[in-house]
Length: 142
Image (cartoon, rainbow, N blue to C red):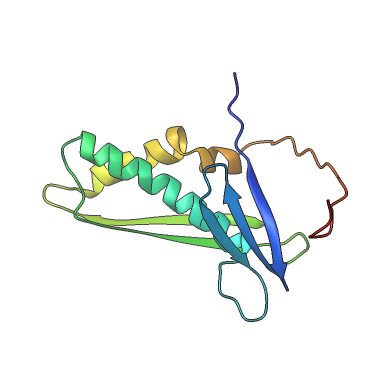
């Protein structure tokens, strides 16, 4: 049986939104002039980077070569036309630790990107997008 995740997005004014997961965790998405959060497209890059980071850190620990330093740089190249979707994404893993080799890091990164990372798999998939509409109520109305 498929698992369903829900995130509720509330508009805060301008182009600023807060997303709340089922568990109550929040993310601020902001595409307004005076940004205090990340843009939706930056959030997508961050989701990919953190998803693969979880995998790589875990794989390296299981192989008894834990990382002592680790950073991911995610770079997205966008189309010049609307929608300005990502046409290329580069994920650069920068890591170190006692006994850690580039070969081990490469194997862990490829396992993540090719097998385990749900965000990477979603970016490479045909996704059924179901758009539904409902009328909202003004605050204070019952």
